[in-house]
Picture 1 (cartoon, rainbow, N blue to C red):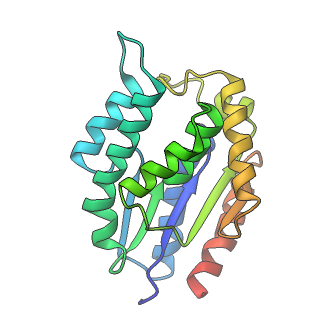
Picture 2 (cartoon, rainbow, N blue to C red):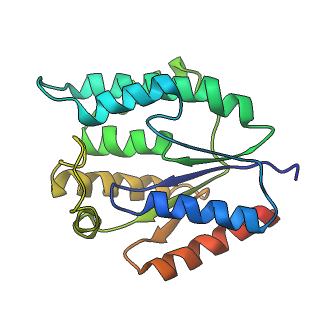
Length: 206
């Protein structure tokens, strides 16, 4: 197929992004779309994965929000230059998180000035936008309940209040952008998948 698309799945930790990404691949394969590059943020390249590990699991010293932000953009630049730019015209790309996460977590959650985010976006020449973003909206209490049996990383250990602010910022942006599709991820998985299926099949036929 010639209409290659860039799909992003977003949501707070525990929203079910990994499950839905795997389901989207199944839907694409069922539609005879095999040329799919699946990635995630932060990460997606060897260097970016090392930065991901620092961001998520560093211990032993105070971790500045500004340090976190700069590492996220360093990892994104590696992903952009080594994966996304090389595949955007020849393969379908599916990413678990992209730049919307930065706006929600860093501006909404960390209260970092939006001008700094926009400066970094411009600095790394991040001019590639997804064709569609599927935002899995879920109550933070429900989301954290879903992942309570795993070992929390540094960000997952944040408070309910933090994730509530992140969610609010996600919704603030999503409600203004027609390319961001909000899916109620408080529902059971069957209903979430049904909503995602409708979105993906509409995208394929466009």
